[in-house]
Image (cartoon, rainbow, N blue to C red):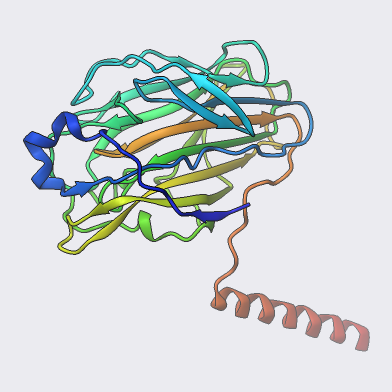
Length: 309
C-alpha cells in the first residue's frame, strides 16, 4: 500500500508567474509531476468520503479510485496569493450534500495560496526557506452521527525540504528534511495537521493526530538552493484520529500551515461512526525494543515470584 513512485518528466509551469523576479533566490527547477493522489481508506461502519483532487486553475482529468474524472479548475487570483480563495465544495463525494469544503484560512506575511496551472501554489517574495505561507484546511459542517474515526490525506509538494511550516525552525537557509522521509509510518509532530472539534454545546477542542504516515513519495525535479543538487518531492500524507472517546460532535475541521512556494495538489477527508485503524503505526526504535523487552522480563520475574509464594 505504501510505495515510492518513479515520476516521469512532464511539463510544469507552476513557477512561471514569479521566476523572472525571484527565481535566483530559490533555484528550484521542477521538471515534471505525476499524481500521488489520495487513495481509498477502508473505514468500518457508516462512512462519508469527500475529495478535492484538482486545486489548480485548469481543468484536469484525474483517476480517483480507478475511475477517470474530469474536474474544473478553481478561481482565486494570482501571485503572490493574497486574494481570497472561494470555499471549494467536495469535488468527488460519497453523498450529495455540500457540507465539506476546502478553504484557505489565512495568508502568510508575504503571500498565500492561489490556484496555479498545476496546483494550489503558495506565493511569496521571500527567498528564505520555511517561510509561513498561510493556513489551509478542510471543513465539515454535517459529520456522520456518532463520529468516531477521521482520516485526512493531503498531497503536497515541498520547497527546499519543507512542506508543512515548522514554527520551531523559523526562517532559515538550511534545507529541511521533508524530502528524506521514507514511505511508511511517521512520528506525529506539532506541525502536522490539527483536528478541531466543535460539540453540540458549542465547546471546542483541538487534537493532534493519533497516527501519521507518508503513504507515497515521488521526485518532482531538483533544487540547488543548498549548494548541491537536491530532489524535490511530492508527498502524500495520511493522518488518523480516534474519536471513539468523544460524543456529540456537531462540526469539525482539519487545518495545516504550509511553507511559501509549496504546492498543494489534492486532499481527501474520510469519516465514519466506527473506529478501525488504517494508518500505519511507527516501528519502535531499537532502544524502545530494549525497554519493551526489559519490561516483559520484569513482568515475567514478578509472575514467577508470585507462583513461588
